[in-house]
Length: 483
Ligand code: BG6
Image (cartoon, rainbow, N blue to C red):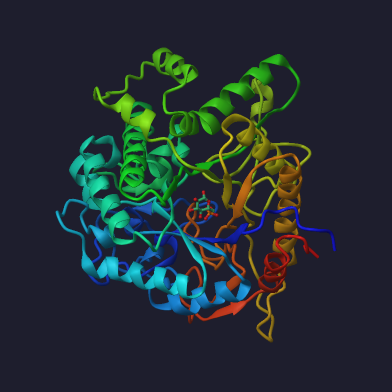
């Protein structure tokens, strides 16, 4: 076996998000969050947003896979695989049910105390996202969510209560999951969650770029304020950004394709990170705003807050890459993707859900990010959504998942040899959970299978897939044994 190229103490683990995992949507004082009013969907049928609950309709977040009542069992399974780190998020409406209370909900805080204590008892470091694609729905009614400037102060009350309460238990925090999805057309559902008063298919939410970018500005300020607060109050705490990273390859070497690739890279992959890492709005986005009639309302102190609140480490999700083409005739050949797709790459195969699998793109991305920012990097999501088959004896032979992860870890190795300072890897959905884009259960990512199905049935029993034993070996060998 070759020697490991990964640093000692490399943070191997897995990632989840509260609204897709916890369930217990109305337990112990929790309020209604945006995902709680979203129905299920599929690859072809959009989830729907129904502020009024419909009798007889299934809302996948309500039970999800019930981490709330299974956390001890799940964390013990993560420990059995050898996890060093566990990425999870806190459900905002568990702590502030409407987002506007003056004091946090003690029962909500106590739940996360139990979870973090359990992680620590197993020697697992929690990596906690403060906001992962959810917010109390009451804030949408109040101020259209992040479009309203007042959302910053509600969020800060929430973030401060987490940092204060969990000081000593949580060292690594991430502010907003995939913050840069707010730059794309589906950003109204990812960045904002929904729009005040909207009922209907999530895919039909109207796109309002001025609202999206204003919301994003408020998130930038909130994120930077968290960094400033954490640094002042808790010097041992580290705060990272979290971006969706997807290479935007030029389809050809036509200079027009090259320029388009660069501007798509700017908009999708660099703009938000440039603000969060470098502390100011880059020139290319100012040009875009002025040419597209977008004016961001800023307070006089915002620029200073952004400058002072730059992150300590860089994290991102990586699933796929896309191509771009300046030639309208070639733009029709589309591929799908998480949050958005692009032009199909003839050299790549795609998953069943149409996401193009591109391990080499991960090495490329790691090098690009490292060259630009020189900050420690963690890959906090990566993986293959696939249907699993449970054999008669209960075993699950998910060789396709092992192959996907192996090929990506091999490219991580190459990137480390290239000199990239990679410090952690938490594959997505280390235990099966609800799909963010479709609300399905059948789209599984886990090393651990959960007996839960799209129609809401299932015992919630957990079992180990083949990939569970494989990943255990990977962690034990610090990434040297990928066989
Ligand atoms: C990322 C999100 O975009 O992709 C996760 O941060 C999500 O919340 C993951 O679950 C995988 O996407 P999906 O739609 O397959 O669940």
